[in-house]
Length: 226
Length: 387
Image (cartoon, rainbow over all chains, first blue to last red; front, side, top):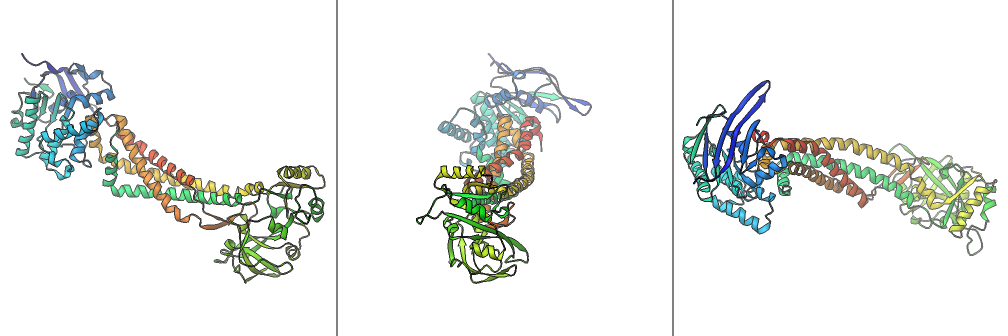
């Protein structure tokens, strides 16, 4: 028996207005992702894969159609509710790591936890566990500029998983990394899906990276190919 | 939940050049604000420090200052034995009719001239002003052309050293001592014998009468008796009240201070705004990341407001420190009541400092409001995609 669906996208479109021209980034896409699945989203540049990822992560809103994540229709949430929802449900990994340069690795990982009810020791334990999980416990007091690209991305993964969200989304997380670091990062994401049961969505145009997933879907010109 | 303060602290340190420029801008505004206001406070203090609560000042009706008042000898004779006026051990009324004359004398360190107030005073008048003390030389001797000048005034007027002589009209006066008015209006005066002053300045009349009254009720009774006596076009009021009304001079200084501070604060607001706009610009992607992590708009807004206020507060503290050395520094201006030289001190009070800090924080908040709003309004997806 397969796991229940975590993400259900139905007839979702996203149209950007560029001057007088409408650019269709997503064209009536329907997709279901089940719990624990590691989905690789592939496609050429401008195919709409990042847009789709942003909609699922509650960072962007679709022009039409529905996007339900764990039974919640994201359309119904206002700006503040959506911010809270992202904090509790989504771990985001970016291509450029997006760590706060003035904060240490520890403080970067701690940032999402500052919005939760966790206090003091419990918060410290959780941050340290997340850093240990990505193998960077000994780098906790380093600033991002004192870390290598691969280490920065692992800190970013620790930040994404520190709140224990059911959904992890990664937008070209290996785009800026050498092959060894890329392999490390993908292995961590795979482990999160396999052993922690997290739903992972990976946007990439590298077939080798996509191969880490349990399923791969292709997007082209805003439409799903298979 | 707000972003941690260390995030702001480290950001302002990273952008240290812009931070220092903003802090210095605010510091300058606050220092100017505090200094000009402290002048006004000092002037008011000097007026407030003057007078004895047991004394009543009598001047001509309609005169706001002694120098523009006249009291005839007949009027003085008429009222000096009234029962409301206290007597000394020998039964003599404790009352002094003073002659106040304005003379023009050269300044010590320039060729310019200043109006100086000379008070012809009686021994009773000196007893009525116990706060005035001799700090150098000796008191003048009646019948001789001698004066005792304020020590603070001596720092600003030529030939006011003890033993020096200066000319006024066709007469030469010798400075035989320095007086200290205990930071009162008497710090701006030259004292000499009343009869001598009347003689060399050809005054038949007196300028004012200072009288010790039996008690407060007697003071009020004296005032109403003078008011109702048709032969006396005079006005009596407590000496303390007379001097505290002489604070009009502080008003233009206050207005100037407020104007200067307002004008300069507009500059400081723009400096803070510029710094924070640059900061928001440089941190756009960071803001996007924070929003994705779950931080709400108001967290971003308050974080930038706090940063602006923090910068300005540091500037404010620096401004206070910069202005501190001027505390107690003696200076002078022209009185708007008597047009004579008035000596007073910069007076930096804790309340003035607090006002300076509040002012600084206000400048910081106003300056950071627009950049903070821009940061908070950035849609996360737009912020994330910024380079």
